[in-house]
Image (cartoon, rainbow, N blue to C red; front, side, top):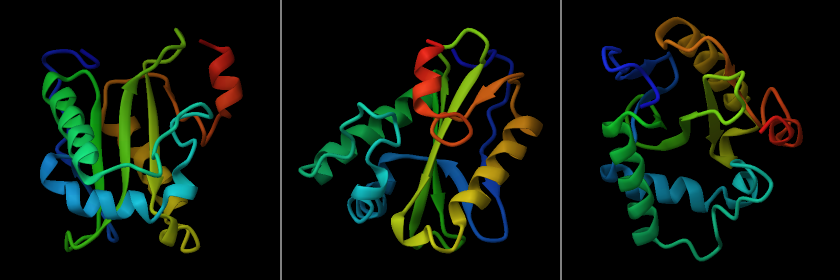
Length: 159
């Protein structure tokens, strides 16, 4: 488990422009649309060797991925949150909290926003909100944000 058994995992986070909540299979249609319209921007979000999202990613494969994330959340081994518009009409991105491989980190956080939201600065505001949320509501002492606050190259040298 990524967190102690007695830790109550936060249900999410709500700001004045978005909400984070557990990513589930019920999000597949909106998630798939956000991913596929942002493929170029998302390439490498999980590291330079990551092939995700593939050009041929199907709705069915995205459903499988979301089911996997949902099960890991239930098992407390990692936590995937959808970033939804306040009215839940659009998926704006995702936030993933994973175990960190470098020994001096408790967890790593990967996040993304859809390509159409980049010009508005949403990714920076999401990162700031998530950093505060992690610091205030999660039990981690040292969290890495590879690809955001530390380059993937540097992160990989620590593993």
